[in-house]
Image (cartoon, rainbow, N blue to C red; front, side):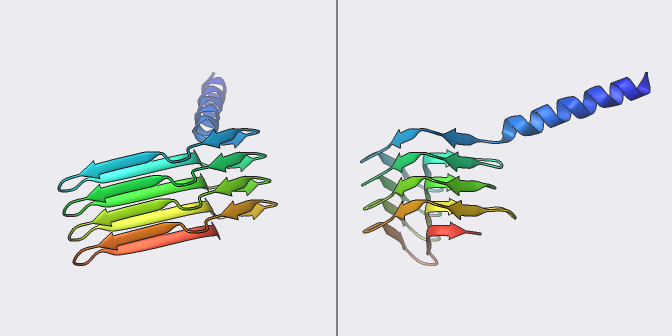
Length: 155
């Protein structure tokens, strides 16, 4: 009886874990010229186009966020822009277009992070993919501000 309960718990645990994995497959994501903005103290503008979280996989897909704009203004503001990002996984046979994407954070202690065609995790891999970030722009302005831009990164 204890063995049956243990097996059921393990099975449910594995099912829950698998459900956390995000996947984009054989898909077109078109976020051209989208705009996201947050203003005031502690504001956060988070913009995600074609993003798979938790052991994420993006395969055989086309992701476009050409000219996308993400803005955050105010003290301690954060602007975070992800285009074609697989968190903890794989980017395979995929085209990611983040050309002329803009990401801005302004104000004291502001942070701007822009990621185009990026995978993270211990087994992260970019394979047979095209990542286009020409003219993309990431900016943080203000005392103690920080800007970080990553294009085509597996870490």
